[in-house]
Amino acid sequence: MKSKVTKLEGTARRLEIEMSKEAVEEVFAAVLADIRRTAKIPGFRAGKAPLDLVLKKYHKDARDEVIQQLVPRGYQQALEEHDINPVSYPEISDVTIEEAGQLTFKAAVDVHPEVSVRKYKGLKVTTRKVSVADGEVEEALTRFRNMHAEFAETDRPLEKGDFGICDVETFIDGKAISKKREKMWIEVDKEASMLGMGEELCGLKKGEAKDVDVTLPENYPDKKYAGKKAVFRVEVRETREKKLPELDEELAEKLGKSSLAEAREETRSQLLERKESNARVEMKNQIMEQLLKKHSFDLPASMVNRQLKVLMERAESELASKGVGKEAIESHKEKLKEQLFKEAENKVRIYFMLDDIAGREKIDVTDEEVDNWLRSLAASYNQPFDKVKEYYLEHDLIGGLKEQLREEKTLDFLLDEAVIGEKK
Image (cartoon, rainbow, N blue to C red; front, side, top):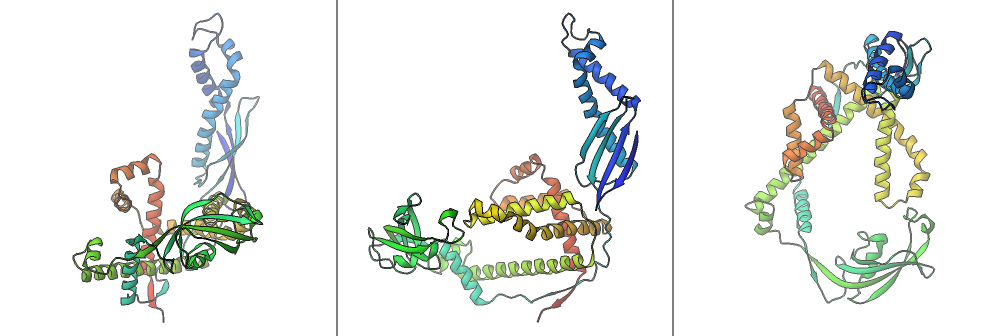
């Protein structure tokens, strides 16, 4: 076999590979023998037809199979010969079997960039001392009370903080523009309701209706109505009063605690843990920002494009969840790509830098650490550990999870080695 490598832009490489006539003939003979065993040639039993007849009928099939076998073999041999570490699947082109018998083809591939991270220990980061005020504890307990609120039916007019269960129709110029939405829960509060309509329900009773004038937002799902004046026809079918449970020992039991004092202490501890975790994330972000400023190297275009695709899909999903229509998303796609391209590059650059540091510091992830992470995930979703692990194995997700955990361990290492100052 012969091969040569040409350096293209960035980390791209082109391999030109030639498999010898002898290698092609050897594989061709083996392939033809396999075909002959099952070939259906009129007048001959399977496996007994002359090779020249088998070759005449199945020449294309045999040639395709030779290519299928020899191209991966030649590509792998060329990688080993030139000590190439690919980070993308090869793009195979110009596959030809020459008249002289040789098989030639080209393979374009991205290789691992040359990365050497400098002075990554002792990086300076800052943080604020975290604490939890009594008011924050009470706010957290109020949120828990809201989660366990009851909604009692009333006969009185709606007041701020109540909920109306309503049928809603939307009209523009007297014509309905969408199907009637039935039994919508609308809070009687301007800030907590769709386009502030909740405030307009104040004073209405069960069975009463009201037309509410609104201006539809520019990101309205149906673009042809965006920004237009509309009327919401709201009919109140039921009125409900929100009742919070008392802040007492019974509530503490719902939190799994023996007393209200214990519930408060546990809530404080959880809030403090969350703040400390957020502080660590912020310091890790400072570390990554410093690494990005200090290092620049060529990036594999294929990896950047894959990362950009992930970021784009996430951004489009978030926009859709906020009611932005498909047409509006599509019209801003190129601008969105430009905005996210740098972020995609930074994520790929950080990946290679953390990989370099992890290799130098011999940071790795054990099977036990993977299992512990999966156990935590299973517990958070109230699922059996074995079922969650089976899912990750079946979908080939363990490798990606190990990479993720290795990156996190490397950032923990860098933070442990950092010089931490306190923000003023």
